[in-house]
Length: 182
Image 1 (cartoon, helix red, strand yellow):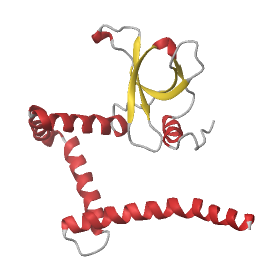
Image 2 (cartoon, one colour; image 1 turned 90 degrees about the vertical axis):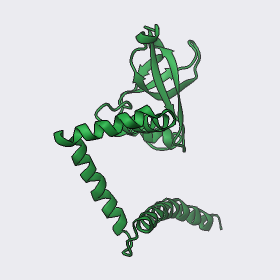
Image 3 (cartoon, rainbow, N blue to C red; image 1 turned 90 degrees about the horizontal axis):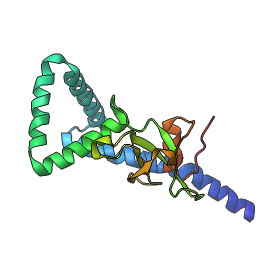
Image 4 (cartoon, one colour; image 1 turned 120 degrees about the vertical axis):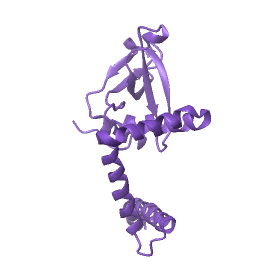
C-alpha cells in the first residue's frame, strides 16, 4: 500500500505542474482570442506576439522613437497613471531591458555577527545621492510569489554569489527547492 501511495504522489508531482501550465496557457489563449474576436483557438495569442514584436520594432526605429517618447512623457505627467506606468516599466526593464537589475545575486547577512542570511540581488550599487555612501540596495524576492522587498545594507554585509542570476532567482522562487548548478 505504501508503494502504491508513493506512485500516486510521484504521479501528482509529474502531472500537476503540467496541468497548471497547460491550464494557464489555455486561459491566456482563450482570453486573448475572445478579446480580439478571433474564432480560431490560439490565433489571438500569435496575433498578439506578432503585434508586440512589431511595436518593439517601431520602438527601436529612429523615426518612431519620437512619437513613443511623446507617449512616454504623456503617461509620466498624469499622477496616478505615472505611478503604475513607471513601476511596470521599471519592473519589466529590470528583467528584460538593457539595464537589467537582477544580474548580481548576493547573500546578505541581516545582522552583523548573526548566522541568519538572505539571498537577493543588488539593484543599486550606491545611494550617494541620498547621502548614504557605503550602502547598497538589495531586492529580496519572495518564494512562490511575484513580490519581494528591498533592503538597504552596508556593503560589508553583502557577499556576491558565484551563480547565474536566473539560477538564483529560480532557487528563491522555488523556496530553495531547485538546484543551483556549478
